[in-house]
Length: 117
Image (cartoon, rainbow, N blue to C red; front, side, top):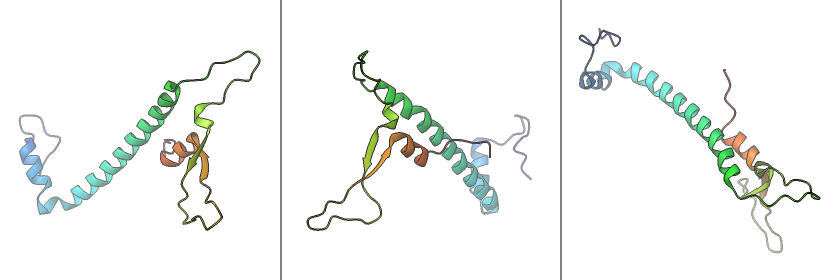
């Protein structure tokens, strides 16, 4: 029995913990830790993307605002052409049009909003 929550004097050293986790008897713990690591990485990457993309968009240069014109649209709502992934190709005399989305929709597809579920 290995007590991973033992007091520091009786706790595992990092090398002993690594030996234990790499031993054949710890296969079930490794599987559990791998699932937890993937979940944590997913949460951290989604959170980082959802925070970084609006900051990058806000740092882009904006056109000057004129009092007689409406304000320019939000950078995250501008159309963004993407190559098609459905196998559509251009045939002779016909262009293959790109798929058009907004950066906000792309961000929602790549990094859905975090929820408590």
